[in-house]
Each structure stands twice: as structure tokens, then as C-alpha cells.
Amino acid sequence: MIDAIYNGGLNMIAASWWASLAWPVIWNLIKIVCVLAPLMGAVAYLTLWERKLLGFMQVRLGPNRVGPMGLLQPLADGLKLLTKEVIQPTAASKGLFFLGPVMAIMPALAAWVVVPFGPDAALANINAGLLLVIAIASIEVYGVIIAGWASNSKYALLGALRASAQMVSYEIAMGFCFVVVIMVTGSMNLTEIVLSQARGAMAGMGLNFLSWNWLPLLPVFLVYLISGVAETNRHPFDVVEGEAEIVAGHMVEYSGMGFAIFFLAEYAAMWLVSILAVIMFLGGWLPPIEALGFIPGWIWLGIKTFVVVSMFIWIRATFPRYRYDQIMRLGWKIFIPVTLVWVLVVGAWLLSPWNIWK
Image: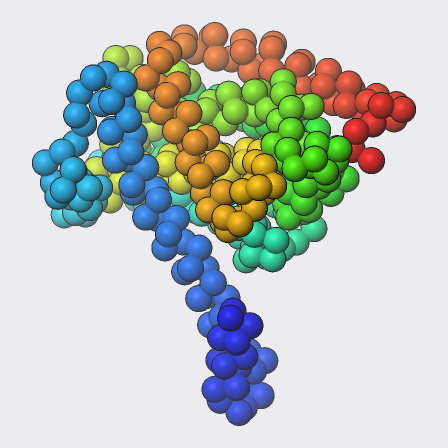
């Protein structure tokens, strides 16, 4: 069907400039919109799901006034922020002040270019997909630093310094988790990482979920999940926005859409971290047991990603906030040594007679 649409557009105008230049550009733009439109909807409704789930865990209703069961609440919040004035502090650096939110949300959206939604369903199915994700995701910290510095406020700068130090610290542990997955897969292509989890003795018996990477790489999976929570500055690692200490962190001077973009960037990063966890450790679009293979792969991918992203909210409802020094100690003294040891363990495992990834 997709090929038929592409060929229909290609043959629409019989001219060389259309076939070689215009239509490929338009086609890529259509594909980008097809990925970003549902993503922005998912980001908006994740804010509602968070408030609903927190309400359920705290034995209250959550948002239930705007629309049936509060389903229009994200639209109301978006409209409210859209109509508010964007106030720029007098002493702020104007260009950088407005560049900060753009730099924060851009990597969280751009990294989706290599995320596969099925065996042949990725915007760019490139061989160095995982490397591209790491490279793009690491740019996000610049948006935070720029916003904190350009605001010309001591609170914003303090929040930005905390955020950047925390994000860089946990990026190292996440990077080692990626390295372990690359070692066992032998590829940086995200589609190949998923397909490699469909092979093995347990997958041959129809018990696919026992051949996924989460089981042999369980410590790495747990380190990745917790590092993902810290990387997105979510509770209990949200000292960046520790309301009792430093007001609202790096976005304290932002209002209206500037604030809304930072808010969306946080939730977009949560979706990205979750879908990467599913692709690398939970079999991507593969069904948990072969008997459920009749359900389309993209539905399995969506269900798994939704469960992982809900764990972020579950963690928020359960744990108290860490002190800043505790966060740093966890990253540098526990997670990085644990992942380094596991790189060596998996390396020895791959070279041993008990290698299960042959």
C-alpha cells in the first residue's frame, strides 16, 4: 500500500525535476508528519495519563472536568499556555533565551528518525542507528544550559548546572548499556537488534519473551531504566526542578509557550527512552508468545512502550526525592562500575562455550 502511494505520487507529474528532487522531498516530509503527529498526541496525553495514574495511586480522581472523563484536559492546558504572554526578562540574552526551548525539544523529536515501528517501518533504517540516537540525545543538555544561562537568573543558572551535570553523568552509564546490547547483537541497526531477539532456543519453543535481552542482561536493563529516569530529570532525580529549593530550575524565567515546549520536551524524552528500552531489551514489535503472533507488531510495540513509560509515573508516586550528592554518587560510583563490569562479563560470555547469542 505504501509503495502504491509512493509510485502514485512519483507518476503524478512526468518531469525529471519532480521525480528526482521535488517528490522525494515531499515524500520524506509526509513520512516525518506521519511519525511526529501521533508522537505529539502521545506526548500531550501522557501528561493526562500521569495525572490520572497518580490520582488512582493516591485514591483520588485526577482531572475529570474538561470533556468526558477529563479527556480534553491536555487541549485545555495547551490552549491556556498558548494564549499566555511570553515574558522575556529585561537582562536576558534575547536570541539564546528563545533558542533554549528549541534546543531542548529538537533532539527528543529528531532521534525518532531511526526508531523502527516494524520490520521495514523506519524513517531511516541506517546501520549506525543506535549511534545516531546517542549522538542526537546528547545534544539535549545544551538546550538546558543555554536556557539557564540566557535567563540571567541565579536560580535558572543553578538549575541548569545541576541538570547538565546529572544528564552527562547518567549518559555515560546509558552509553555502556548501549555498548552491551551492540556486543550481543553484533549490529547498531535497531531493526537488527529486534530481529536478533527472535532467535534462540526459547523462541523456537514459542516462548519469545524468554529469548529477549532483558533476561540475560537483567542488571544492564535495570541500570538503563533507572538511568533513563535520571536522564529525563524525572522524579526521584528531579532536583533540577526541586520546587522547595530552587523554584523551577532552568525554566524558572519562562512562561507561555516557552515553558510549554520545555514541558513537552521532558515527556517526548520519556517516550524516546521507553521505546528504546523496548527495542533493545523487550523484543520491540515481537509478540511475547508465538500464539499471539496474529496481533500486529506495532500494537505490541505500543503496549510495551506504554507499560515502560507508566513505570516512570509509578516511580514518581513511590519514591521520595534524592539529594543531589546521592544522585551523583549513584551515577558515578555504582552505575558506571556496574556497567563496566557487565561489559567485561558479556565479553567473556560471548567468547565462552556457553555463548547463547550465536
